[in-house]
Amino acid sequence: MKFVNFAILALASVNFVSASPIKEKRAINDKNQCNDQYCYWVSGPSGGTATLVGFGRKNQNSKVVNVPTKVVFEGYTYKVTSVGENAFGNTAITEVNVASGISELKLSHNAFADCKNLKRVVLNSPVVGLVDNTPFSNPNKDCVFLGQGVKTFTNDQVKRLLKSLNIEKKDYSKIDDYQRKVALFELAKTLSQYIRISDNKDGGNVIAAIKTKFGNSAGRARLYRLLAIEMGVPKKDIFIGHDGKNAYFYYLKLDNVWFNCEVDYPFRRYSVYYQAEWQRPFFMDNASMKTNLGTSVNPSSWYVLFSEYGYGDEFRGQQSYDIFDQYLRQNKLGSRK
Image 1 (cartoon, helix red, strand yellow):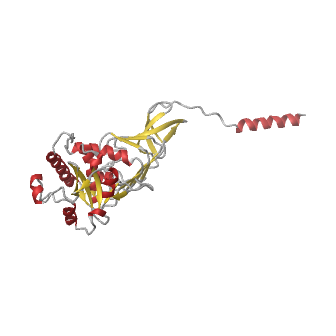
Image 2 (cartoon, rainbow, N blue to C red):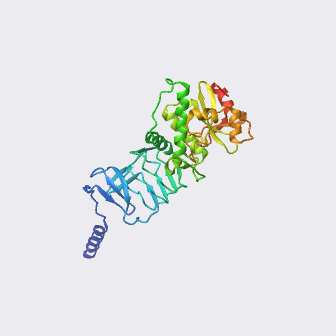
Image 3 (cartoon, rainbow, N blue to C red):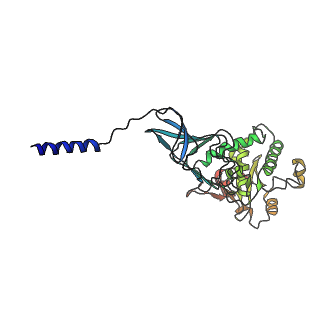
């Protein structure tokens, strides 16, 4: 009997020792919290939101920033909603990935600015909000921007760029044809001074052109279109054109007539509109445009491109172009000269 009691007592002791104590949550009093990978500024003592503010103690030499959807401290969950001011600015990072589970991500001043080695940005968050035009400014010349958040990011930066270029919005229904032409000519001239011609890797992408200040003909044509729309030109009156070979340009509708406009117009030689109008027209008919482009493709075969932003995954199995004259007829948008 004593042996049995001793065995029962021993077994109870083992069970008591091996049982894991229940860990109680502790309120977080310090808003600055770090794990091995990153540091955050959290909103409160028991969950809420978190701002990513930099690398953690064991991740200081990392070249990749992966912005997560959430982070846990002391058992409390915080949703990551923003990246803080100067969080990764002027660092050696090469890549930034934003998780798709973040419904909206706010980027603060200089969040990823002046990262000369940054070559890839994937914005999987559908909405990217910004406080100014500094996030991702001056990355590597060949930086590529991808993801569903590129659209909102680009739209925000186009608005800020127009303002920084001191170009005012206009009600184009209330100004005459000549004033419209002057304004559109001046916009193109200003843009030619802002974006340098380049064959950079993502040069056809509007946001890459804005951030690197380098772009190819496709990127500069797309940026001009978005700026013109932001300036007040109706969206249905300006499109991106392509000859089917190498030339990109844009179509502009003025007084119910479609014109063709060069992306690489020689503004250094023809810098004033009234001189350009009779020396080398900026708004051209089909024959003049064909000559200036040096293309062998008949204008009736030129395309309209539906890719407004130019980022890699903008179109997924959708029609991205059409014959422009055919598109005009189908949508009753007039005809070209």
